[in-house]
Image (tube, rainbow, N blue to C red; front, side, top):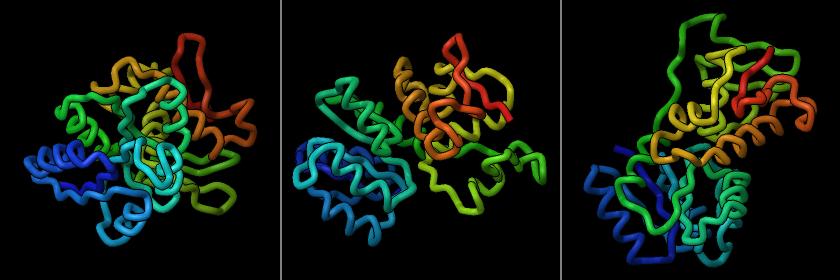
Length: 226
C-alpha cells in the first residue's frame, strides 16, 4: 500500500485512476492544479506522484518543474500527445516514468510497482562504497556526495546509477536497463535511458560533454568506468 498523489483537472480520468488504485489498497489524494499539488506534497507525504501534463495554471512540463524540486519520490507523467519531444522534455524536468493516453490501468499499476522498487545492496561495508576522484556513492545508504555535499537524486536516477555501479566495467544495454529499472511496461522506450543518463552526467561528471565515468558504448549500451 502506498500514498499516491494524482494531479489532473480531468475529473473522469482522475476518478477512474483513484478507484483503480484504491482497489489495490493504495491511499489516493486528488488535486486539480499545481498549487494544490504543492500544498499536498507536504501534508499528504506521497510515495508516488502522478502528473497529468495537461493540467492548467502551470501547464504540462511546467507543473512538473514546480513539483520536482520539492520531492524525491517517483513521478509518473500522463499525456495524450506522446511526442518524442514532449517525452524528452518531461524526463528532463524530472519525470521518472511516462505513460501515453489512452492507457490500460494495468499498465499504470505496473509502472507504480516499478516506481516503488529500490535496488538492493550487493553486500555490506566498503565494497558498497564507490569512490572516484569527483564523487562518492554509498550504495548501502543510497547517498551520493560531490565536493563534500550531498547530491539530490530522483528515484530513477538512483536506481540506474546503482545498477551501473553494481556491474562496474560491464556493458548494460538499454533494453536491460528498461527491464531492471522501469519494468516491462517501458519496453522499447530507450530514449528514457538516454534522458536519465544525461541527467546523471550533469550531476556527476566534471565535463558532461566529455564523460569520464558514465560511458556509452558502440553497441548502444552503457558502462561505468572508475
